[in-house]
Image (cartoon, rainbow over all chains, first blue to last red; front, side, top):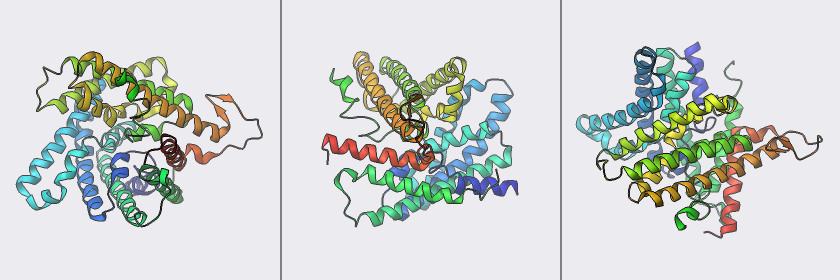
Length: 192
Length: 193
């Protein structure tokens, strides 16, 4: 049950984008194409799950074991950057079709604060290995959900006559605000 | 001088370039929090700008992003330790958003666009300008949210006790909506688009 609650919390009640403001850049910059948003979401989920698994091991067996926790940020960001690079090379070689679809999104993931945020939250909450893996996967699913919803709404917005100062960033932020409000409706789903 | 002023208004990182949104939205529940985050980011921006600008001829082009990230995250570690030691309450309020300065796109963006190509003096001015512009935006957003939340600014009571606190302002939805209105106002004033 506990694992299930971690998953539901991170996807719905404490969505990374709409509750913790992580991964806002790709969220605001997402195009109005559902397919692109979905591709970006899948690529990020993949990297996030792997990040959770690897950083947990690094944190437990290297940083904590040798008492060098002050290296946390440096080592995490290195892991993420190299992980993204590895995933890119792996896909290019073995799954060229998938690479064609996801390729352009991959380099952007390194600077997606949701990935580093995930690792930091994981350490802060002292999750065990399995919890971390579920947390990472759930965070990715939640990110994908927010991204796809946003892409859908932007598609609709294109047809509307928006007041001049609101065009672009402002209207997107306003939509995000309303989405965050809507997601607040999920609170209570998970006992705290 | 142009290097300094640019970041304040014309290329304000928050209102115009829409960069560094995570900390902008997450920590601006009060003016003080916004200010601390703004100053911390400015410090990292200036320190890594100086380091990278001085090392710009030494860092090989192929591994520059990785090198930038290491330099930036080292300075963030310095800030985090300083905050923990001297202002522990603010440090715990900012929580994981303080280390998340590492992935603040403004910092990597300025290194890539400016510090790695320009001499030290100009990079310093650029970093200070961008940092102050970012801090100003955070202070304004934090001030507005705090004011509407409980009628105080920077902890001082501005409105009387009759003011009922508006909890939505410190919740995520309030952050998005306030920033949206501020961006729209900024665009209106500067007459862009």
